[in-house]
Image 1 (cartoon, rainbow, N blue to C red):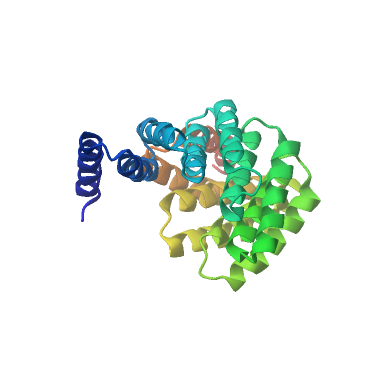
Image 2 (tube, rainbow, N blue to C red):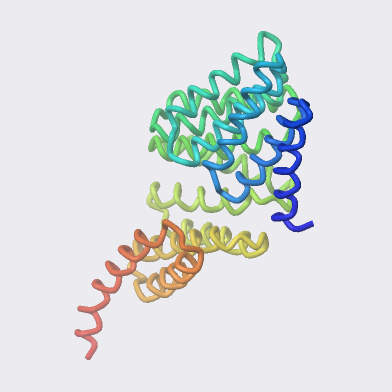
Length: 287
């Protein structure tokens, strides 16, 4: 079934459920429609349907389902740049769970709280949220959840310029991801290790890690991550003054970002122009 057809069916289900008075059926269809829009990165449309589901679940006393929809609404708000509102939404989700919450859902809410705090550059609260997810993963014996927490802890530590702990979290994540292979987290971990290596002054290792990230992204078929890895590798090569190769990689990255209409285009264009400006005097000297 095509996604468009699937969405049409869900919207028809929403209408029919409302007409028949089946409000829980309407809410269930709303959450599914919200998920379709969320996977398409249509955050305002997704938020509309999650909000309708939340309203129905609250009225019907379905607190766990209300919490799930609030958690998904929080994701929509984070992705649309509304981190403060996302935190308010996620706090409501946690309150709806009550004193004995579903452990997996509570961990998901905590993880999204961490992402919202990170967007607000509140790294201390972000770290604590992802640490809570790690602890929940260990209690549940969920290695995939543990890996997600490790990646987020590495990323938060990197953003907070705490590079050695960031490296430690990323290396543990790498070992776990390799055990769970094939795992899409590998390309993210390699890129994190590359950026951490750059901050620590080990640019040659950074180049190698970003190359591994590129290969993992190719294997996963993730075009955006391929572009990110190429751009990061190019910047590491610039630091090593290997400007010709850096320009080649950044040019390839820019082609990908342009194809995808990515927001990375502007930064990459700026980086590429800087490298070309540095190459121009060199070319003049060689004539």
